[in-house]
Image 1: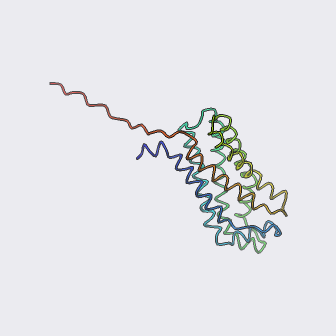
Image 2: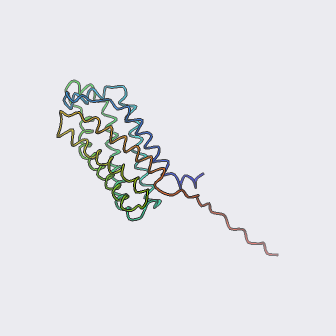
Image 3: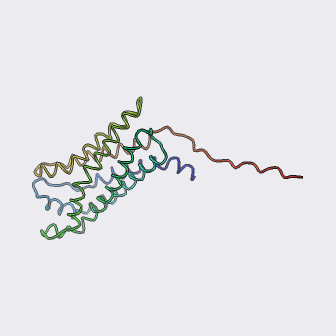
Amino acid sequence: MNHVLRASGWRLALVTSGVLLALGGRMHPEADAADSATQELATMTADERWVPGHTLILASTVLLAAGLWLVLRGRVWPRRVDGTLRIAAVTISLYVVETVFHLAASVDSDELAAGESAPIAWAHLGLSAFLYPASGLALAYLGASLFAAWRGPRRLLALPGIVAGTAHALSVPATILLPDAELSPVFAGAALTLALWSVLLGLASAPYRRPVVAVPAPEAASQH
């Protein structure tokens, strides 16, 4: 069993990450572009779906980071992508911090609605302004590197990563630059595409190999 986990742990992490992200993303409350950013966040964090949905998203992000580190450690993908894979693993690990504050922003729901100080919620927004673009660009870069490194049909697996990473990177800056636009579909599309990519990577980004089990050497014949 331990040999199977060592050989396929990265697959389990990536596939589970994708499934949890798809489930959590579907639970995300919708925003109203007519409201201010503070009012939108107050409404969404007060929604009963915020905590369970973002708990799933947090778990998904932790598993994605773990899966990328396991891929790097196991040298699963072509060595030429090790550099971009390491960058993606580091930035997604940092992005985990944002997802923690994202989830915890619900504790400031009443303060947001009253227009009072909301340190956790504002920390979430501050971190997202940096870590959404950073993690999204890192994933898009990883997807482009895999596309260049792989050959044959497997190259197609890299394309959702480029799309998901780009959409993820642009989502938060777009809300800042276009405060009156309805951008919920951008967030939802980025999450769904990233979930799909994570599952595809776990299932088909490397050949399946039977784990090698070490066989103990036979004991030396006893001397007579």
